Each structure stands twice: as C-alpha cells, then as structure tokens.
Figure 1 (cartoon, rainbow, N blue to C red):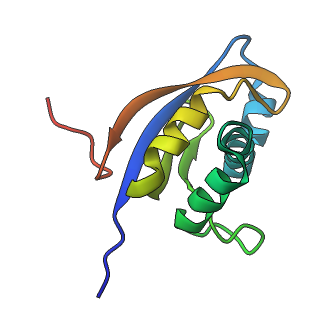
Figure 2 (figure 1 turned 90 degrees about the vertical axis):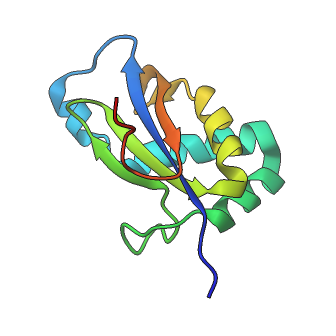
Length: 122
C-alpha cells in the first residue's frame, strides 16, 4: 500500500490595511487557494500547475476536488496548506508572490513548514 508523503505549511496572511471584520469573515479557503493557484501558474506555468494540482489532497466541497487549504481562521488570519512533498517548494515559493486577497493588499508569511501538523515543542 502506498503512503502519501505530505508537507504542511502554516502561513499568516498579513494585510497592509486591515479590512473590516465582515470582509475578513467573507474570505474563504477557496479565495486563498485560487490566489495560490494563480501564482503557481504565473511562476511555473501550466506544467507547474499540473504537477501541483495532481498532488494536492483533501476535499472541502464538490466544486473543488483538490483543496490544499486545510484550515483557515479569519480572526487570526492563519491558514494551513497541505500538499505533496514533491511539490511543496513550488507551492511555498509561489505563495510568496501573492499580493492581494479579495481586493485587499496582503502578503503571506510562513510560520511553520514540516511533515506533520503538530508544531515543534520548545
């Protein structure tokens, strides 16, 4: 039996000007996912997108069978990405180039990158 090797990236969305609370609650994992997918296409082309789309795991609803945003908290603006180990660097480097989310200027800051969901103990 084959085991999927995943990587988890915990990121924070830093807004240049914090949008109103109702706009933050309107942001869904699909908005984040679409911005990262667009960034992958811009930086790595269709080949990069095809590789990462085939490796993405998880399912939130019927519209999007391969969703890599596992968790999103609009209050803390922290989310967790899950992707294949082989293409984790493609997703991480593409997320650096995301500059807007729902018409608000922002940037993504990596907090944790690893093979498990648990944060390392200090």
